Image (cartoon, rainbow over the protein chains, first blue to last red):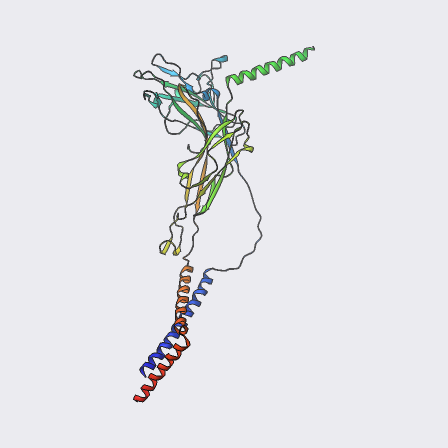
Length: 204
Length: 222
């Protein structure tokens, strides 16, 4: 009798279990469908408003600047003027170190300047400290502007030099070099980078 | 020759000489230009975003430039069209040479709250600040003149570039949990059916006989 009951109970238990899991399966299907959140679509009319903003600017270095900033062959230790600082041809006394903003540019341009290193003699490794190479800049170009009174020392980090230079206008530079008396003889050079950015943007 | 024609010829000669003088004093050189229509791209985690910048040179000499991105952007840079470009002289901004940059935004930028790992029943609340990869596109003239005694000069133009990562908030998604429940249910249902109907007809009859025998024995005992 007991075994019959057990057998019956087993059979009934299996059926209950089967019913439970079938229900659970159906429940999971219903929940998956409800999780997919099928909704209706709202319909509305739209009008598209569109504007596109484009910016561009271009710069070039003057011929003298492209050829490099030379301080000449110094036979005495002194304070050297770069050779292109003053154009004596025609007695205009203007600097020929210019960075020009093309007239088709659509934004004003700020300029950033940096040196890759101090002036270095590649053979001996001797240097002239970077702070000894200085520059002045202005959008005017006369005998006194850019002037030595507002000279700034070069650094190896990019810093703003000219600011808000309008299309068609040049940012003009003069360079000076203070050669200490202890400087060993040699040929010293480095590279300066002039970077144009849109006015008010940070230097890269 | 009439006097006014001679005058015109003289004026033209003077203008030509002045123009040549200006060219000699300010020799023209190559230049670099940059044009951009869009400086930001918005993408979700795991998505790809592309931005195009144009390089041009409206000056009378061709220039050879190198295009580079600042270090912050290299972290997500996927494809850069090219590194060095020759820009012909007199290329206006309208005919700028396009350079495309594509970025693969990492999948796991914003924090997700999950029951197990980073995949099982997750929700995202987007309480963090928007992640922005910010840097510059820099176009630099290649190779300064050699043999300069002093400072060689190179030029560059730069424009900003931003890749903003969108955070899409979502509620806890239980789909995977329900799928798991469904799969387990199916497996158990299959096992129960197999247990019940998996035996041959002979075995099932034998089981029935056994059950009947035990029933009869129990009646006899009574």
